[in-house]
Structures are given as C-alpha cells and as structure tokens.
Image: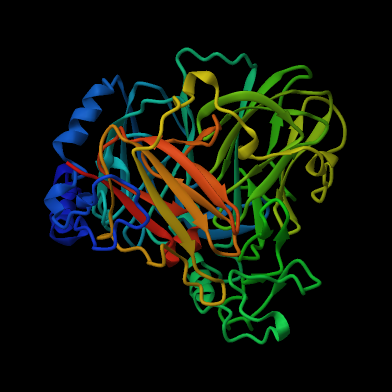
Length: 530
C-alpha cells in the first residue's frame, strides 16, 4: 500500500488549488452587504490557504493536548442489517462504524487507510478544527486515492455529540459514518448511562441499488413525466396525489426505482423528500431485529441522537417517556421538555430521560414517508413491542430547533453583523438543478469574510423543498438568542438568518445536507481574506 505523508498529500492538493480553486469569481459577492466592495478579490493569494500560517496560529491557540490515536480502514464489506445482509462500504465491518471518543482539549490523531475502489476522505461534522483537516477534496485536501492513507491530526476544542463521514460524491449514503463523542472534562449533567443513537435511511446493496444509481435516476428529474394538471413541480408539489409514497419512473433492469412522490410533512413545510428507501435504521438495525439497550428502572439516561441519513428527517420519541433536550449540535441549550424531537440530516440532539419499568420502543418516524426505525429500551420483563409500533408521543409535543434557546454560557453577545451574505437556495425537482444563488458548486466560487467579523448568513429558500443547511468549521446562532448550531432546517419559501463569529480561518463549505441535493450542486464556500 502506498502511504504518502500528510504534508505531501496536502501540499499537492494545495498546489492544484492555488492554480484555480482559490480564485474568486466575479459573482462571488452574491448578496453581500459590506462597506467595501473591494473585498471581491480575484487573486488566490488574497485568501488564507488551508495550510496557511493563519490556520497554524489558530491551532496553536487551542493548545492541543494529549493524543488519542485511532486507525481506521474504509473497506467494501458485507453488513448485517438484522436478518438481511447487504454489500456496502464501511469503516471496518460494522454499521455504524466504531465510535471515536475523546476528551475536549485533546488531539485526535487518526489514520484512514482507503481500501475502497475509489478515492475518499473524512469530514468531521460540526467540529471547529483546523482547516486543512476538514476533509473536503479539492478544497482543503486532495482525495485519498484507493490504496493510499491519510493522517488526520487536530485539536478537538469543544465537547459534544458529533460524527464523521466522507465528503466525496454520495459515499455518505453508504455505510461510511460513525459517531464522534467529545467528552466534557467538567461535565455538568448527571446521568447513569449513555446511549448513542444513529438514525439512517438505507438503500445500498438492496436489490442492486446503490446511491450512485439513485443520484443518476434523480438527476433525470421529473420534467418528462405526465403529471396531469400539476404543472411544473418546482421541488415537487404533489398536493393532488392521494398516496403518500409512490415510486414513479419504470425501474431499470438492474434495480428498482427509488424516486418518491407525494411524501408530505407539515413540519417540513410540505414536501418531505425525494427517495423511497427500502429500510430505515437505528444503529444499523431494521425494526424487525432492533438493538436493545439495557438499563434499570429509575436510571437517568443520556441519549445522543445523530441523523446520518441521506434524504430523511426523523421524528423520534421514546414510548412512555418525556424527553428533556439539553444540547443540539454539540452545544447546550436551556433545557426543554418534549414528547418527540424532529431531527434533520446532519443534526444532533442530546436528551435526558428517566427510565420507566418495562420494555419501551424508541421509534424514529421517517418524516412524511410513513415508515419507521426502531430500537428498544429494556429495564424489566415483558414482551417487546411489534416492529410497527407507533408511540403516541410521536403525535404529541414535537420539538424543533427554532423553539430552543442557547444556554447562557454559549449565547452569542448581541452585535450587529459586519457582513451579511445572502444565499438563495434554488432549484426544482422537475429539473433536479439544486444550487445556491442559481449557481451549482464551483470550487472557484468564494464568499469572502475577514477574521473577527460577525457574519450573518441569510438563507433564502425559494424552492418548494426543505433544506438542512450545514456550515463547516463554525457554529452559528439562530435569531434572538436561539440555539447554537452548525446545521439548521430552512423551510420552503422561508428565510433563515444565522450569525457566527469569523474566528477559524481557511476555506469552509456551506451546503445542503441532503446528500443528493449537495452533490447536484447546492454547495458553496466561504473564504477568509488575508
């Protein structure tokens, strides 16, 4: 196996980037509101590079602590989903991959060996870490070629619930994901046990399907379909359809159609998603063979919930229990009680529950798709509920991020933004032409910011679909003292303004965390000016 050093790989990647990837396009100012239009620069030399001195200096300020060494291998492997085995790609031979656990302030030193048939990478979702370790091929590193390896090494500054996955094509919608739990050395919460819960929608290896084939089908759009009087679907409005899940084009001989129409959710503003997945999973298991978590009656449990799905939001509830939400996207909130929580792709929620006596269903409803994922909490005797169980809590008080307030310790100070960047979310299901400000992702496109600025991102959703928008390398604040997050749902026809402090120099992605929307073009990047 060839094994170039991190510096060799990174240096080669930036040599490529320096010839064009870091060049600002003339349209890169977008909707920017700033005192100096001169910030629209055309020379790559005016941007901080991922391995620049500014990045190194910021990393030094984090005072990297002791190393936590991990070796990881990306492989083709069979995976048992609970009575059904599929062939997929994964980290090792398990789904999700083995969690990585580290203490805030320590240094993660992880070596990824790529035994896949194509190049890959790892993005550390939600972490404010050094830019050259962010794992975006063509922007912050070169792809890790088949047969090669790469050493990721960076300080982990903030405690919380995070995860990692590739940023290469639609690989994330295979089995290449795992939790990253950053423990707080001064943990203020009191609990007896911890349960990490990873939600997923699964298609890879089922009846010949692959995420790449799904993307190819979606990319054809619905423009050629006979939709009667429904007209242009603009993202796709199926209000006249009587069924909530209907596959559409004739299947290809090699695999069935996975395109979905009519998936509707009031919580998501209408259209819930594009893909009819054959399976919905909790911790890699189908509802027919669920994972069982053991505890004692009266135990205080911390549930760390991660949505690793490609196209599905989940409404999750624990039958017979109230949930006390304590964190979202790694950052504490004013504790809020709910019956269920809505979790978009890429979002995380930490909740506390006091376990009752018996066997209880942890049910994740695939929002708008009329299917569920299941796990069980067992604290006593009794028969397990059926796979199809729907706890009444799913239809009671459902909490969303907009209802949360940041804990005082992490609340952004009140300050007018120095810069506002308008990001119009554009595209339709009819043409499957998802983009930002009408432009598909181009690594040369830059929205410039400067260190120490308060930056406002204004997500203007002009489509008829919802989009979970994710910012790399930072956490932003929702309005009016709202939660600190890195991924937030933007509803169709709505505008969401979020603020962040520009304190982590480099080149950082902003994109929809629907993996198929992102790969089709709904991505862009911020660039720190020197």
